[in-house]
Length: 273
Image (tube, rainbow, N blue to C red):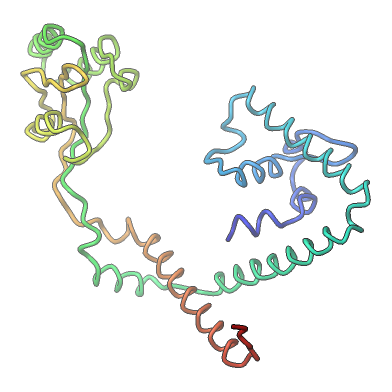
C-alpha cells in the first residue's frame, strides 16, 4: 500500500524541499533529484539506495529517469490529457489514490502500547525461541593434506594468538567465499549447514578448532568456533517493535473490516445473477 501511495505523489512536490546537492540533473527546467530516482528504483523492487550503486550504474539509472521525463513531456504536449481514455484512467487513479491515502491515515491513527506488546509476547512466548547456535569461521581447501597442514600450524600456535592466526590462514589459504573475511561464517543454527560441518562445529567449545579435517561435498574444512550460544527465548526488547507492528496491522485489518461491514449494511446493493 505504501508503495502505491508514494508512486501517486507529485514528483515536483517531493523535490521542493530538497537541497541543491540532491538535484542530479535538470531537463528542460525540470529538476531530477535523488528522491525521484529512489522512487523509480523502489517501484522496480530495488532493495538498495541510489547512493549505494556503483557510479556506472548510477549514470544508467539517471539516464533512464531523464528519458522517462522527456517521454512524459512529449505525452503531455501531444494533448493526451484531453483524450477520453486518459480521463477515464485518471478518474480511476484518483479514486485509488484517495483510498490509499485515506487508509494510510487510518493506519497512522492506530496506536499499540508497550503493555499490549508485552501481553502478546507473554501469551506467545514459544514463538520467540532462538535455537542453539554458533559463531564460527572455517578454512576450506581441496585436499585432506592441505587441511592437515593447517591443523598442524594451528596446533603450534599459542592459544592467545589462535584466532588471529586462523583468520590469517583463512585469508591466504581458504578457497571459500568467506576467505576475505578471515573465514567468518557468522552465527548459524544446526540445520543451516550440511550435517558433517554442523556436527563438527557444534561439538566444539568457544575458542576451539577441529583437530581432524571435516570432509563435505565442498572439500575439506578446518573449523574454529568463536562463540557458542545456547537455545534461549529472545528478549522482549529485541522483538517489541516487530510485535507492535504486527498488532497494529491486526487492529488496522479489524478496523477496515468493521468500517466495510457498516458501510455495506447501510448501502443499497443489488446483485445481478
